[in-house]
Image (cartoon, rainbow, N blue to C red; front, side):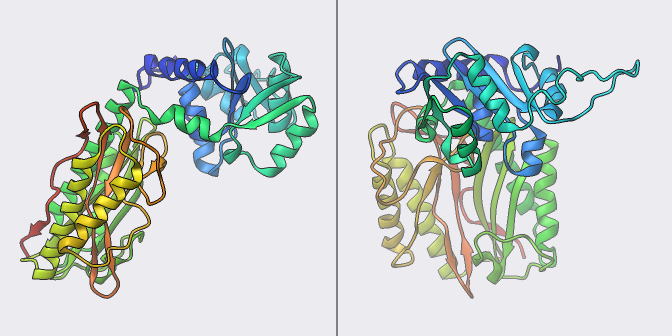
Length: 396
């Protein structure tokens, strides 16, 4: 069995947490469909899910059993990872040949016709033909939902999407370690990108420096926003061959995954001495983010953290400062609950991990942002990223 960097004990601890929560849940067992929830339950990450954008796997988690549903194509890599062959319910057709000419997975080929049939078989194998099953409905397409209702008429499916979010929102120590490692990699990558900046260098050239650092550190780059000058106001935009000019704002918004865990950070530089507006506005953004750190603590509602950021930015920066959110949870997904937004009364709790951010985008002028990762502690928060948070001045 091949080793992964992720600690096997962390995978076991996550499964134990799911089972502990299941004891208090309004259903008998739970079906994980999304890639993140499946990873949380099993530790296995599917290349097929990454390629196709939807997870072709499911995990049926009970008090004692864990059955994995997946395509035959995921059987060999899954067993190599450590999935139990006898607990793998396969569907579809794929062939793995052996050196002696035999098919090593012949017994799995055509075991079940499709995804829904395999899920139904797993449910029946657990003796749950008349039961309540928590279903990851946000990751369940309508056609699949209909198929499951037809195949399992005695099963009452209950939406467990929010239940999964709550269970995953409080991170284990090993998860926090991986999130901090991910944040430090992205932080270093952006610092390397700023070091490569100079008049005449293109956004794309800087983006390549950023992604090179990420890959060299074992991270999978997911988005690399490097925009300059007027383009820095475009929020989510790919880097282009635009060459940097003196006076430009240079904005970074970079995300990647390390062993399944996300990082999402932002930094801003300026090419040469900043103008009064550039300096004043950035100092306001930084103060707004710092105000979030100072307020955030167990029991504080997410909406209060948002409001504090807006109030502080408006004291010396743009007025009004209009944002739909000023942060979000982060973990196996880049956006996790709770979101730091107006109307969100969700209280912060120890072990929750977030990205707090205060971006500003002004079309025709430019954009800037600072975004950092943190974990809520009993005393407040601990930053998982803290380097180069100020406005970096690049000698033009």
